[in-house]
Image 1 (cartoon, protein in one colour):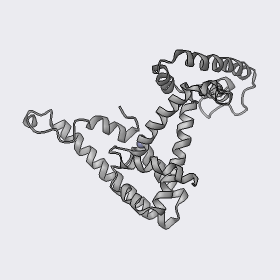
Image 2: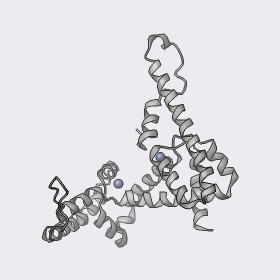
Image 3: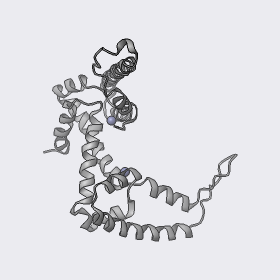
Image 4: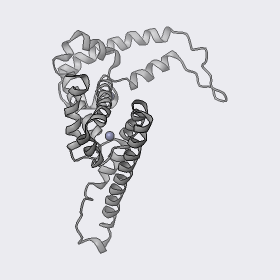
Length: 239
Ligand SMILES: [Zn+2]
Ligand SMILES: [Zn+2]
């Protein structure tokens, strides 16, 4: 089985799922899987611990890990991570400032300490793990798009994507497809995205109308969750 084929089943399932973005749907299950992975026996694995010690997690994923209520697991992960951070901070403090540490007009000193703290705030083992899988899914998407006409049909009737994953598809398509194929893909992708923006905007309009007494007795149609679906469409955050 080729590398692409291993990823085809989840991606086809995601495109068969009724949602505002199949890649957000994949993200959600990858994220859940990664949280379970981190708090499962993996934290006893020296290799994994080496990675979590170095990266730590972003605030969003600390919150999600904390919610899992595996306090001992978290304590073990945090203990060695904090020791590593303490040690790396010591090294950052000793480093000389970068030579190009000023911007024109405004003195913005880029110290190694600031670099280090920025890195610590943004680095995340779970984000990296999920993005790594999603990257394979993007390649698989184009593998399917090229060879499987029934997948193309699924793509054509999909509800489009969140703006972030729309961007990823556009970008990767330009990179992996031949120019002629990219032009065809791009035309379809944009048409799907815009018509589904129209659909969600229509739901929002109807949702707003429902607060007008003249429409009070009308049915909600598809608009009850219009606000949360709109937020997902324009941000990739699913409330
Ligand atoms: Zn998305
Ligand atoms: Zn994260």
